[in-house]
Image (cartoon, rainbow, N blue to C red; front, top):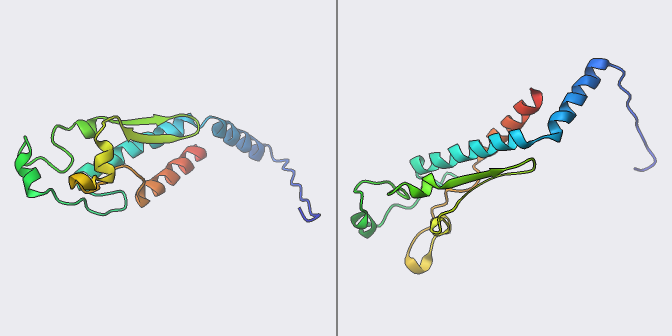
Length: 144
């Protein structure tokens, strides 16, 4: 440290108590990561309504042959039976929050399949708004 050392001693009991509360909350982050996972689930579901990727890019329109082949006329992009959106799963613990899908075809829709002429329609990922919401959640949680 280039030969410089600074020590700060705080004798204020209220400040010390606040630091203790902050440390206790930081020692158990499971609740806030669970909140983040839930927020990501809602954000991801909203993408199906908005028909857009996390970066805001609109999903490619359905090909006419796909529209004709759909069993439910008028059903939305990536939504026919509702299984893809209904099978979104979250996972969280004291160190992370994640969202994904157990459906085998989820990767095809997320990344596309050139050989089958299926464009990528990403629905998983963080938007700029998600990042801001996560920061707000964390700050509010630490301030409680």
